[in-house]
Length: 248
Image (cartoon, rainbow, N blue to C red; front, side, top):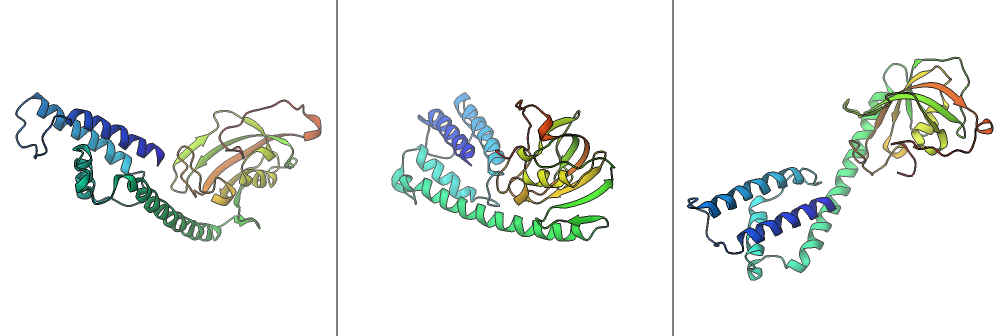
């Protein structure tokens, strides 16, 4: 949302500098190059704002009200504004915060329904924490502990099938340094196993967003456990693991 506000501000400044000497009347015919570039600028800004507005937690905006307020503001006609300029920021934040809370509640309710339906599918099991998993191939090796370092390959998708990440080669990480759903899920696996993990948002990123992962997303991972390095046998060398660290 902060990015959206900054974009609108910068675009408004661009409009203001371009229309500082302009007329308050409708555009009418494009009689000269100034008229044409002004109109073209309006198209460009409108298209950019259209994309930015898709990020809002509300379904749509009243474009007539938006354009009226923008026109009065750019023409410095503050007396005609129906909301004081000094109050505008608070009005926007109040409405957006309420809309975000309502959307989060709807998303969480939809997630519960999705997980409840998913749990009824053949082979899907659920742990006490709400983590769901499906055994694709059961290995015969050891199972890791949370303090161990593991090597895996994986593909991560959203519930609509969108791939948000995958390993191009085996990757190693300390199991207690990643999201809770991974820490718990991979401890269920033996070396050589392939599991599908269905991780509720509360065991992943909660209401945070990262990349293609939106707030309150359920994450689905196809994971193969290739190896384990026990905590007592490895060095204390640091590592980097992206993007499922707990600290994100």
